[in-house]
Image 1 (tube, rainbow, N blue to C red):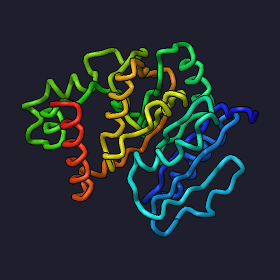
Image 2: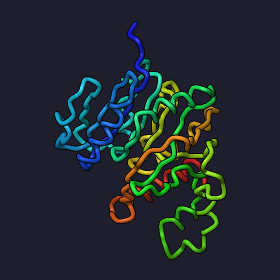
Image 3: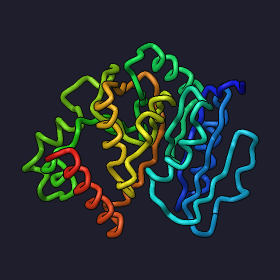
Image 4: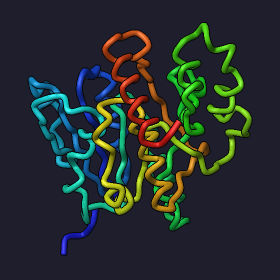
Length: 256
């Protein structure tokens, strides 16, 4: 029987900056574990084919943009019984080689723990509020429209866990999807992401799904990563409508 890899990872690619992406890939390849990285190309032109050649990388071309969650789900059958841990990774994230081994160590301490995520920083060193309470409808409205924020200030404040000490680990309601480290068996059990979401809120949804199987998610700020965070839906009308569509699907599924 083939020995399991310690970790697999997946990055879904579309309109990526090659410099940023190269740094992300190198961060993962530098991890001192038996590993495999899947690069899932959602471009129609197979733009990223033959760019990153490495024995620990497998390139997968979809030939069309199927979205973030469905893109990650492409590898489900490939990682089943192949790895102990699976990483959902954004193409604009960098981290030290000790981060993943240390997170794995924490993840294995609790059998009820399905997923772990580190503290997230902007490239400037500023803290990103990557662990949050589940969004409420009016909180999302307030975050989206600046002129309404004063009306929902307290909801936004609590939604970001600003009322907690974020320097210590705790079980968060949801963790932003730029870096999710799962026990592979749990990611398989969840059947990955809900493919009704093309983009946005699929990370919130999968955290809800973790709740339904009686497992937990750990925010672990003793390890840190850097995430550029594009915030595209604030500037791009198409992405704004994608975000709005996902929000409607989320609240119809889980309630307002």
